[in-house]
Length: 359
Image 1: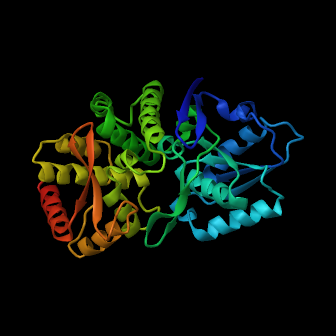
Image 2: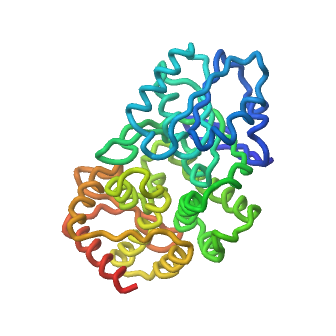
Image 3: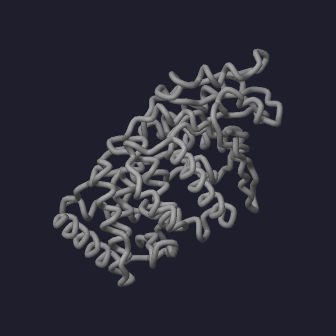
């Protein structure tokens, strides 16, 4: 078992990474709570909820609730129903919420914790590769039909407990989704890791190698969060690929493609825009070929969708004054945030589509 610590101006919490940690979560909770409320989804709960419950003594006041798996559960309706369940089960300000699942469960359960009685403790127990990113950093949210994660808060967990054994049951599309975020972390902060990531096929990557990449990705995220917990400055760099990625998720319908698959397309677009904006050469073609070889959906954009995509990109949380802001790369490991006018953005999208048609 390995332990890391995230330390920022506003919070400090441990991250535990290892095999079989789901059986002993109580051992990593250093406080007594009046109630413990476990939130999971139907896919994760059917596999791991009993394992988690068996690790608690019978005298603990534990309740649990299962939501449908998928992005559609990050809704105001599910948020409200979970608040209701918390009240019905007698949760108070000395209670704990445990988020057992992937990014959807973590975001939703974290937002419930942030707002229940003005905020109670919660623990992230991620079960996907993608959640290595979303469980660290304390950003919690639900979606709005105008855009992803537009209703939320900065609210840090008291611990992250990552049992990497749970990754063995992931379907390939979830592996693709999580791996895209690790690639993002390599692009913004670790060129050696990025190049190494492209050396592996997802169908044959060994669990030990994947665990190494997960830890490296978490370290990148933790270093940035420690310097900028509330996204006033460099934390925005973690949104590389997300401006178009979130817009694609919204336009295609939440859950129709995974978050990471949308971000992978957003990374390609960000590299394209970066090359034009800064007149540099970046690993666009290497990334494209790797995504294609590993069966990522390369999403097409019709001319009719360009204006809608631009409007969605304006609704992105990074946008200021109605202008689209994108995280770009002057080179690998050198991210910057750039504000882009509408006419220029339309040109970038059109040239990107032309470039993709030739591949």
